[in-house]
Image (tube, rainbow, N blue to C red):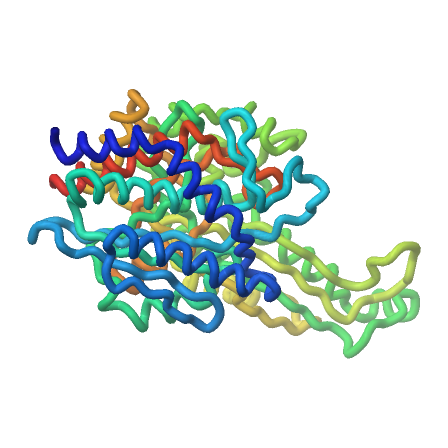
Length: 458
């Protein structure tokens, strides 16, 4: 029996221990944003470190950061030409509120039908434990076919504030050929997929100042310009009627979709009716010449996330506000750069803001877009593994959201990240009754085993 066959046999015979492991980690309420759960964060980190030690990993450590620790461990004894893969995951979870909307307690994992319900089940303890179980199957079977390092953080749900410094300080320790990021999903339990690109993010707060204080609109209206009105006009000019962004040079570096990519989009089961059902919107909106799925993940956007000015309470108050503020975000695609987009926004305001107000822009967050070439060895190995497990060719997809760690690893370690996880669209991430589909969980374990052997063989 080959090493691959031994590992697959072990995984298939150990579904119950795989479920028990998952339940054990899910019982730990590792909520990173709440200080009262700091002890639980430490317990979750120690749980992971103990599992790595049990699997004969070396240099296992719970490594401190400014807030919550990173769990590290490595096994570097594969053949000389075998690749080194850095596994990335996170052990922290979102708060469980509102508790009254959970059918069962969020930190008492409960199996109902084919799903297990608990906070963190899909995002992303289920993905982390699935990979650990795959590693165990390979260790207990014929051995690991590649070199492995683990970096499992505890701050993803609060924006990973310590991760960049951690990577910079430990670049040599984390050096690798590829990062395997399990923080992703597939399109459906019976529809495997590979996410090969993520949009980036540029997020700003725009602040306008008019008079030194609020004024009576009856006495001063028509004499002093209104910052709220000016801000609305500036924002309205940032997009045209179809949502195409009007900032200077905004599209200069946008990488166009290839014919092959557009053909793949046409095969996705996400037509306009699907998007309408998902959103509950009365009609769809967006840039002409692109499908809804393309606009949602492969085209750049500009959206207002918040507005504040003047009187917003009940009733009326005839005020001419002195200040106005808007929070504006742009989702970016390869090869746009957040710093260049910042400069583009400043040029737009310099060109269009009237002299009747002063203005300032604060950059609140930024992350570069990321893309993995679809013909890379990692993507080919993942595609082969998924097809062998699901019995069908996986679809290639892009994700409209942003995973900052992917860009960080690309920038600081100089390697690409393969997104290979098995969450489902209806897993209720960040919401009450979060779940994980157990048949997909077990398939995920098998996929990781086949992926490791396929990549190691290359």
